[in-house]
Amino acid sequence: MSKWYMSQGKNSDVVISSKIRLARNLANAPFPCKMSNEIRKSVCKKIFAAVKNSPLAGEFDMLDMTSLDDLKKVSLVEQGVISPEFARQDKYGATMLSKDESTSVMLCEEDHIRLTVMQSGQDLSEAYKKADALDDILIKNLKIAFSDRLGFLTSNPMNLGTGLKASLVLHLPAIERKGMMPSLSAMVGKLGFSVKLLFGSNGAFYELSNRISLGITEKSALDNLDSICNQIVKQERAFRQELVEYDDFTDELYRAMGTLKMARKLSTSEFYNLISLVRLGVCMGLFDVDYEKIGNMIHSLGTATVMSGSQEHMTVAECDKLRAQYVRENL
Image (cartoon, rainbow, N blue to C red; front, top):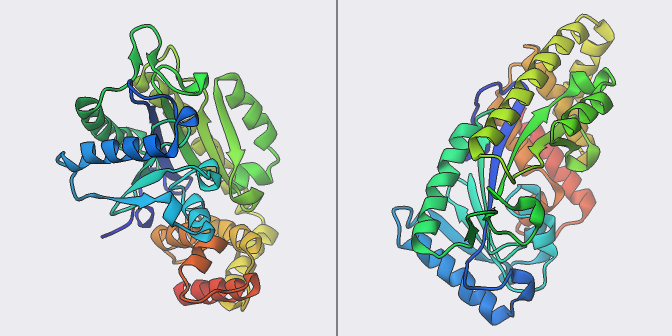
């Protein structure tokens, strides 16, 4: 089955992915922070049973987080399946993961249900459509905590109301190179959004997301985020056209491709910095490489993911060699 990150979408030259997250809680159970492990197990089984007894039966596997080693948990964090906080949690929890890895549901993290849907490119509406379909099944089969005055009740007051967090992963090398990220961050902050660096500040990859869920509808939240994103895409493309006119900058892109094609060792930070430049070169038509191939490498070559995919225990140095080998073979 094709994975979500191995496809293109709207505005894929700038927008890598769209993400919808919904926070939900059962009405007849305390928040996870107040639950014993036995109650946690009972709640997880109850939620999974609600999906198994629906048209989506068979589309999800359930991962018992206590049965996974630390390396696998960190790999799931790298791939956006679970949160870093969930990976560090020592109490019982579980994760439902769809076959194509586009949909994951953390059970008994901060809330009983943290439902996340990923979609390639700028397609918040399609991601929300999928999330809403699963949400409807949960609401139909479970008693979800809801207030007529406050909306969906969540453990964190910031998520009250819709319980929705929508975000877009953006590739902004030109805006970053122009030194415009501080002003962009300040601008979106005034409008109720946030923008943060991904991958440990390596490469020009950013996540743009909403901060407000109370007092607005899901549609308004998505429309506002899409509108902001469209402006950023327009600005990024304009700056890219300016950069391509500089021979030194074009040379930097070709050197990045040359390094990735020839390197025998690639650290995580070096990989993300170089793949960011190569992805820009692809967008500018300099390299004949598919977005799908770039997306697969970005998703799959974090240190924990590389290590957990190996049959043998390896050192970080050995991981760097394996990462370089994988990149060479794909480019």
